[in-house]
Length: 182
Image (cartoon, rainbow, N blue to C red; front, side, top):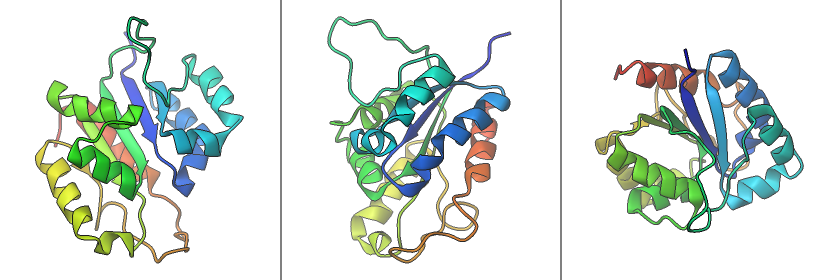
């Protein structure tokens, strides 16, 4: 039996530094993992990108492939976009796909790929009127958005959450999505 394929996508927020452990966890939970990053997140991880590629057996992608190049990843059974920054969420909701991961998840809505996202934004960003509109747009498009009670709750600018980023909530939602549960 083949393992379900999880596209694990992250943008440049502090929890992206936890990706080595997150990949191991996803693999331990039975997923075949493909890692995608925004270009800034890829630069933040630097040398760890090669280790992530080695751990998954697939290239870590942060750029679109060239026309005519074969796709090196298998088809996704689910996508997890976490951490998702203010920038990534707004680009995704608005359909602005200049970053690889945003293009994949925007297309994933149309392909009905089960997708979960969990923001990592501070309390100042969420005051911007576009943020709530983006959360609503993604939620009504079939994306499971883990924001607010039972998901990510914003912290003050410059502060980290004492309990850490709630990866356990993201994995529980992905498991439900793969099983076809809401």
